[in-house]
Image (tube, rainbow, N blue to C red; front, side, top):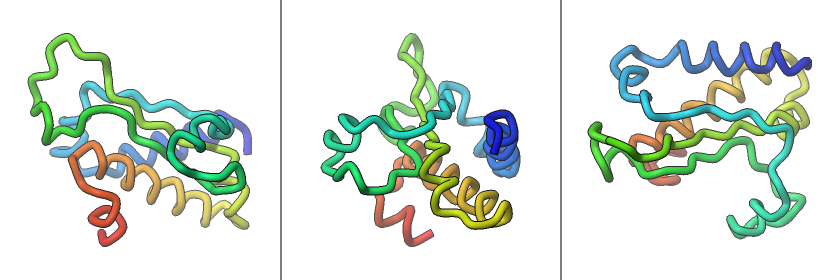
Length: 119
């Protein structure tokens, strides 16, 4: 899939969020990378052959509330290569991108890995 098409899928996933949640994502940037860096995987305790679709970096909303002042934006990374690699159809990719966006946004809202997986 071309990068721009993938970017549109990500945009659609964020647009599908309820307005009350989208309004809280003011200080969050979304970055699309082709693949996670091997050093990143290592820092997360993952092997190079492990699959990482997305990553949230920042302080969850529950930590600092809405008054973020002069802090750098939180970051949500989406990794195009792994997402495309595991999805066999465009419909699967659309679904997995949406799940990944929801997963990482869940971390922004302070949910743990177990809580996000439960949802």
